[in-house]
Amino acid sequence: METLKAHSDSELILLWYNGNEQAFEILYKRHLSLLLSLAVQKTGDRETAKELVQDTFVNLYSQKASMLEIRSVRAYLYVILKNKVLNYYRKESARRRYQEYLASTFGEQDNSTELGIQSREIERQLDHEIENLPPKCRAVFKLSRKEHLSNKDIASRLGISENTVEQHMRKALRDLRSSMGAAGLAALLYLLER
Image (tube, rainbow, N blue to C red; front, side, top):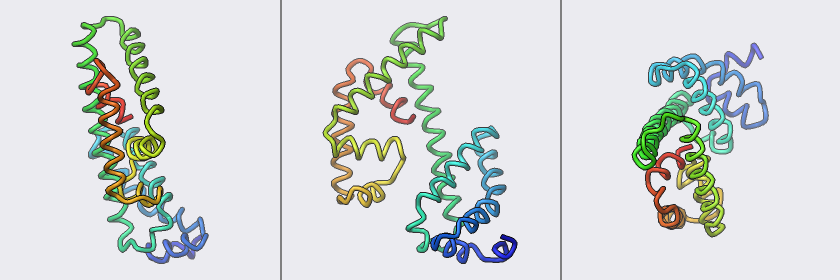
């Protein structure tokens, strides 16, 4: 492993691509502290930052097949982390809007247990409605909203065009907004970002 440390990122990517898992470990150790520092700076919370950085490396690991095209591993990791941080802030914003929605819809709650029950009920309703989507629509929706894949990645994984991915997403969102009724948009904003 010591001899691997002298390799450039590009060389490590090639070694990893060809099956050398230690090369990935070196990449991980090489870039971990910088990414963690950036994530802490952006989120203000070390535990959240650790999760975001871990997710960044999981994302990198899952993209192994396309890594030979990457010119700068550091820049690639930075972009992944930046997107993870943006998603984190979107989730936080959606969570606050959802809490405000519940408070305004059901009145101010002194009992957070009741609010949690209402939230879980809406979440169950949304999960049920997602399962009722047509199969391709459901697959596209889950890959986009739960696995946070890009339209290009979804198209590649499912063997369909990006335009078809967009059509399935529009249909899924339209159907879910329609079927969620009173819980509607605020619940979708929060729960889809989970």
